[in-house]
Image 1 (cartoon, rainbow, N blue to C red):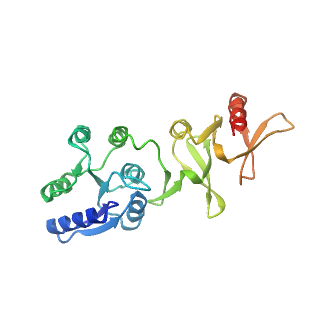
Image 2: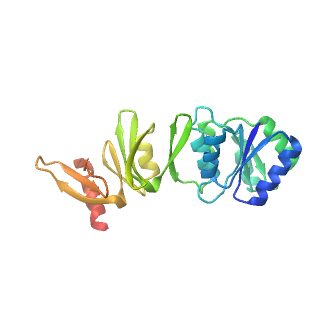
Length: 248
């Protein structure tokens, strides 16, 4: 069995490693220090179980788990946490297994035996309880059974086309595209501070706006830095665009 230990503290990883070896010396142990490394390890090694710390720099355990759940066959996840007993009651109420630091061998062994895959409802409820997680730092795309992570900071726009969303983003200095299954409404709500609706089919990154241009046919197009083509602005959203551009 492959078990991935995800924790930003080396001593915590070492302690879990020792406990797991005591439980079963045949476990194959993998290590990661944050959520980004965890996803990379899952892509490459396909662990059966992930012991996931919740609070980590870069990408925390809740967001990493959310991305992992996009896989057809995600690993089982057991959270590790330093929350106090009151907060843990919320975890228990959602039937999500957790390990309270410092972790005891008996409790770890029980968690390994009982751990199960999270469902979306459980993860959303857990995210609501953990107020530090307000929005994702990355968008995940499943490609041939692995996860591609696109940093939110690299995305220029979200474009809706039927049930799919096209993301345009910068990758190694070049504009790239990929497709996700999401809704423009949910993306707009999640990233309201960063992206702005310009059309019923489009969200753009506010700090990438270069110009607003009127076409000969009367249509208004907005130009984004580094994107060669303009995007149409609907009359409904035109005033919001102008207000934003005046305030910058």
